[in-house]
Amino acid sequence: MSMISVRGLLLTIVMATAFTPAPYAQALDMGVRATPIVIGSSWAVPSNVYGATREINVWLPPGYAGSGKTYPVLYVLDGGQDQDFHHISGLAQLGTVVGTTRDVIVVGIASVDRRNELALPTQDPELIARYPTQGHSDRFRRFLAEEVQPFVETRFRTSGETALMGESLAGLFVVETFLKEPQMFDAYVAVSPSLWWDGGELARQSGARLRDQSNDPRTLILTLGDEGPEMQAPMDVLTANLRDHALPGLSWSFTPRPTETHATIYHGAALDAFRKLYAVPTP
Image (tube, rainbow, N blue to C red):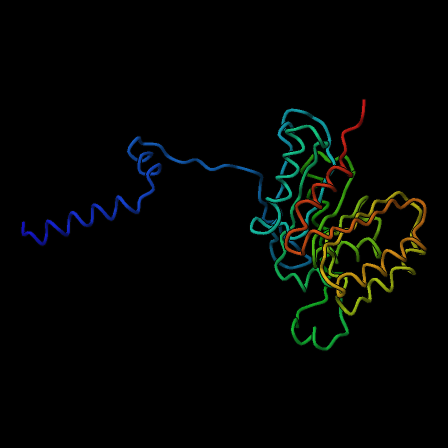
């Protein structure tokens, strides 16, 4: 073998050693193989509403299999595996492990076209031009009511207690659903809802819609970070209408989070919502 070939072989060995992580290389030497960590189950659910399969992800409490009990269900918007499902199911697991919240089933509904599915129709020409598929939240709501909820209720042991959670555009959908179809869920959690959409029209309509609601018990949890007047102004309109027109059966709260931004608010707000909605009963 020539000197050049020997040097080339040595360089190859050195480079392979340098770029192979030591623990991984050691594991290979020992014959160790990785196994998947299973957090939940993912379902490709056929949808007649959309004419396609849709991704639904489900996290079950650790004791679900052997308990025979029924559980409340938290439906999470933007709940795909590469969206918010793992973040929120992790909070549910934390509450279960440390005993600070009740066990709950977490159902993540994946979004495909967020402005199509989560935004109500707008009359703003600029938004229409920028997002030509926008404004079909009514269709997505029908998908939830006619297909997602029945799928969950027939396959898992549910108690009938339900909640809907979402952030940003998903938060807008939460507020719209609460105002237009309040009977769909028992509780609604809207984190930094994009109420600026359509010039804040949904917030302006909220007073009339609140007056038309029944007095059935419901919970609405709202929160907003330091996100500027475009986000704050319609929230102020909504909370003013809630103060003036909410019926006694509605338990609602608005928590400003001035130290948080749109990018940082979700985890802390979701954790607080878990503690409020699923508090462990006192003995």
